[in-house]
Image (spheres, rainbow, N blue to C red):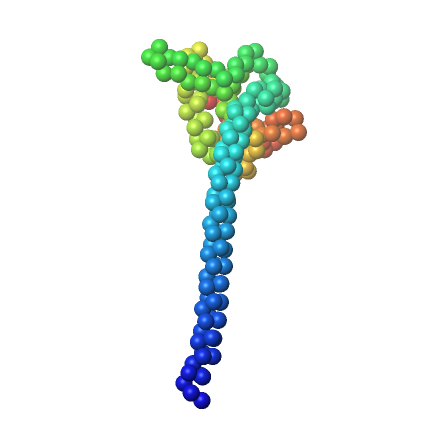
Length: 198
């Protein structure tokens, strides 16, 4: 056998391999282009979904801004009557007060009975830090409403759903906790709990 006779099949095999490599390379290029196109489409879709999600969060935040009016206020009279055996004689929702030096403060709800003042702070999600801030809310109430300085104040925290640990903490500090139940808002503190009068 001559060298050229053994070389021809090798060249043919090499040519076949080169053609296969070129074919595979073209397929790889097509696949990469398709993958790149799909990634771009996915990225665009993710951006659209993100914008839509942000819009929905904004809408929900606006709706959550009405928790006080839609859920808490309609329940306050009954809860205060059942808890303190007193009727509300004055109820303010989203009560804003401005001090002479210019500072202002808004309270979610203030309910006044013949012997006490109940100040409400409503959160979509109630956290331990919100419970801690309630002490400052009571102090601010007395600062912004001097007529209530000598009147006992009860702190009422309201939320959509309350975690047991947060309810226990709020109960320990003496705050009444309300959450959505069968009758709009329901007291979450243990039976027999007596809220602290600050």
